[in-house]
Every structure is written in C-alpha cells, then in structure tokens.
Image (tube, rainbow, N blue to C red; front, side):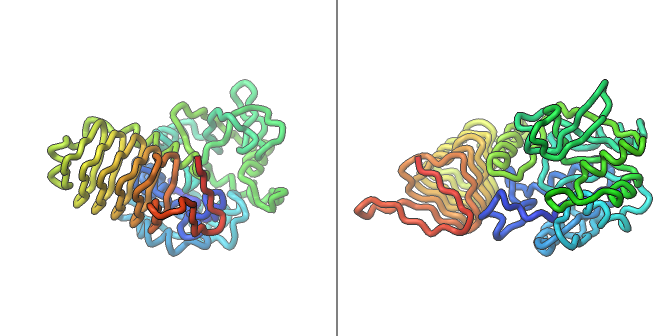
Amino acid sequence: MKGLVLSGGAGTRLRPITHTSAKQLVPVANKPVLFYGLEAFAEADIRQVGIIVGDTAAEIEAAAGDGARFGLDITYIPQSAPLGLAHAVLTAQDYLGDEPFVMYLGDNILKDGIAHFVRQFEQSAPDALILLQHVDDPCSYGIADLRDGQVVRLIEKPKDPPSDLALVGVYLFTPAVFESARAIEPSWRNELEITDAIQHMIERGLRVEPHVVTGWWKDTGKLEDILEANRLILSRLDGDLPSETEAAACAELDNACLEGAVLVGEGTRLIDTRVRGPVIIGARCTIRDAFIGPYTSIADDVQIEEAEIEHSIVLENSSVRCLGARMTDSLIGKGVTIERSDGRPHAYRFMVGDSSRIGIL
C-alpha cells in the first residue's frame, strides 16, 4: 500500500501567514502540520509516499526532504493547478499504479493516526473506506448520507445537509477510484470533487465503507482550527516531560517558575518569568518579566519581555515586548515585532500586510 499526501493548496483562509509559507508547514506545537501526517504513515508501516505539490513545491520539499527522517521514501508529484482532490488522484495515478493507497490531506491532523483504519481496510477489503465525523457546521464540508450504516450519497458543501457526518481528510482506495475520477465532470467550483468520484463508485455498485471517527480530527485551514489543534496536541504532554531541574540543564532558569507540562528548548533563558503549562518553548529564546499561559507554542529564537501570552502560537525570530494587556488567541508569524511604546500621545500605529486581521479589545 502507498500513501498520497495533498499539499498543493494555496491556504487563502490563513493569509497573511500563507503569503510567505505553505499552509501545510504552519507549526502546531512547534511541528509543521504536514509532519503529523507523514509520521502517521510511518506508524502505519506505509513507506512509499507521494506528495502532491503546487506553487509551494520548493518549500515543501525543503522541509520534508526525501522522507528518511520519517522512515519514508517520498516522491514529489507536481499538480498543474489546484483543480480538486479527484484531479490530484489522477495526477498521481502513474505513481500509485495498481496498489491500494491512503490519501491524506496535508493540512489535517488525526489524533490517533491511520494505522487502525489501514488494518480495517486490509481486513474488510472494500473498494473505498471513508472516515467521517460529526460536525457542527456541515455546510462547510463534504457530507455523507448513511442508510442502515451504508453510504448512499455524498454531497460537497451542501446548502441543505442530509446529516452532520463530514468527510475527514483521509480516504483509503483501491485503483477502482481512477475510473470514477475520470468519469466525473468539474463541479461549480471548476474542480473534480472527490465526493463526486466516490459517489460514482457507489453508483457503479462498488463497496464504499464508512467509519465514524471517535477521536478528534482537525482541518487546520483556519486560525481557529490551528489554535484548537495546538491546544489538543499540547494537552497530550504528559509525565515524560523533564522536571524543572532537568529543564534547567538545557535552559537557563533565573527566578523562573514552571507549572504543569512545560517543554523548554536548549539555550533558552527564562528570567523572572512564570510559565503555566501545557506550553512548549523552542530553542534560544529569551523570555523576561513575562507570563506564558496554557496552550501556547513559542518557536525558536523568540524574544518576549514584559508581556503576557496564552492560547497562542508565536513563530520563530519574533519579538513581543511591553504589552499593556494579555495577548491571547493569536497566531504570530515569523520575524514579527509587536511592542508598546511609552511615547505620547497614546495611539495605535501599524504596518500590516495584505489580508491581515487585527483584533483590539
């Protein structure tokens, strides 16, 4: 069995972060989202993985390399344009050949990985296995209509959803999917929808099995979902963490208090600072006169001084100083400077890129 990871999307819902970075490489708990999927393939003993790439191909390839660090053999497959998931399947047909495969959307994170579903697929031997989960906003997803436990209909982003069971971004297929992907027409979005291809498989009389996922799943295409995924992963930090004494061996703690699950990178300095976990802090950071609250991820080479931050993600080489209020629910990009001036008159002064969002409370 082979793997297929889709990493060609533009990430418009995460702009301006994705103006300069592929959405699949935005870090969650200081690890690119894409890496969670690649690790899931390795855990499922799927070693041959193709990655569909688009305009951000060079960045994706630089990050994931040949796959050796994950125990994988990665092949990069250029897609001419983001013309839909079924189009991506056809683009990869030569690579996939006659083997069954797992298709995994590169900006998704599935709590328990995919090994269980791969074993189920191998034992049950359907033509397709689709993962589903109950969602609050079914109009935003591909939705499955089940009757007596069988899939009878799939609809992409329906205005009148027949259920709240959304397609999770993981699919398992036999090569039978290629015929259906070639048979369908582009949707109103001018894309070859994977939901239409699976519906065509159903109409051909092929067996499409559903599996309702009980653990959490996150499509990290929006800010709120990135932060929620970060919270969920940090929540899993456990007793294997180093003690404060062990943390001091790789980081400098000067009148610093660590509470709960806290990971601190090598060369980081915490001075007159309180950190309440779960929190992950990268290497070579300097944090002074600060409070770092739960569900915060701070990347490498970040400077924080006289500030309070919680439930946020701060990317590398950024600086946050002298804030007059706590920063929360935020995603701060690379090389960003946020600081408060003591100058008068008090005023807001911004230099903001395209598609940015600023909330002032």
